[in-house]
Amino acid sequence: MVNIFALDIGGTKTACGIYDENLNPLRRWKLPTGKSLPEIEGAILKACRTSCEGNEIAAIGISAAGNISPDGRTIAFSTNIPSWIDYPLAKIIEDDLNIPVIVENDANSAGWAEFVLGSGQGSCNMVMVTLGTGMGGALVLNKELYRGSFGMAGEVGHLPMASSGLPCGCGLFGCAEKYASGTALETFAKQAVRRDPEAGAKLLEFSGGSAEKITGSSVFAAAEAGDALSLSVFRETGEWLGKTLAAISAVLDPDTYVLGGSGASPLLVSEARSSYPKFLQASFFRPHAEIKLAKFGGDAGLIGAADLALRKVKG
Ligand SMILES: [Zn+2]
Image (cartoon, rainbow, N blue to C red):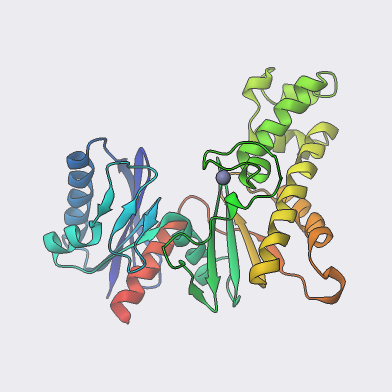
């Protein structure tokens, strides 16, 4: 029997899971990530040691936000944990436990989980787009994760979709994530309600009576109840999303897109499907990629990291 221990290290919480060799979860739990470097490292090592006692753990897979070295050993920099710069996480754990460790970018781990066990199964070239506060991505090309020359491939949220557009945290303007992420949906909804409070009355009902309290979930609930303004916000966000996917198709020509993350919903997927062909190069003369909703939720990173660790053991 071969079991895998997986961790998904977030800014405040770290998700942990023990998986069997068929990637069935045997146990899952969360622990605080910690703040200082010694605290974070101590918490990770403690979780690894405890999990390895009596659980026949053959390898450890770690999913973390940031730029990971292409060999899956070192975190070049982390967006969640700024003190991790060229941080040799895999070596630190291997030296302590003498068990193989792989580290993978969190979006790549989630994308890999969808490719092997989720909505991307059977695909050859798959792009996962994660919609949340921002927009992340993972590329599986010719059935392998594509990390790029510097470990930075798949940043689909920073495709420049609108010239002279909204400023983005990355330093550029008009990035896709300012128009088609979960945050963008909320921003568009708040703007629409402030522009026309009368038309926004129904959405306000679903949002505790205040524009400030509008969330992606409240816009979705109001849209499901037939609210015209909320439906138009989904159409606007979905239009940008479809346009972004068409831009990706012009370069990578994938057969499947998987949309996941807290901002992905059946309604947004449906709007993106309608918009995509309008922006697709040679739309009438070529096959169109499938656009699907992700199968996994918050545990995608754990599952993907567990599978990558399992492959390392099995060769
Ligand atoms: Zn950007």
